[in-house]
Image (cartoon, rainbow, N blue to C red; front, side, top):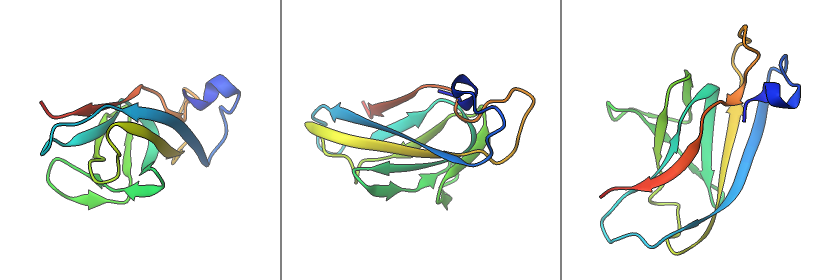
Length: 115
């Protein structure tokens, strides 16, 4: 949920999003991803307390994803525990103030796996 919904239109900083998620069993050899639909600024992901770096389509790794209204996928295979409850945490950092007053997550986030 974007920050304007909480009255934080002018907040310039970071906020945490955290949720427990039960991840179903995953067939061996298949990767699991966290898809973040849209952000306003930077997003850094943690699964069960472990930092998961962002890897772009060119294979370049970064500490966090950065963009406005762009989707990002994080490969969480190494950190997620299939068949168990997991804690997914995203720290969103607003890097600039825009005219819409948004900040943080401005689109859905979901977990998916390879077919």
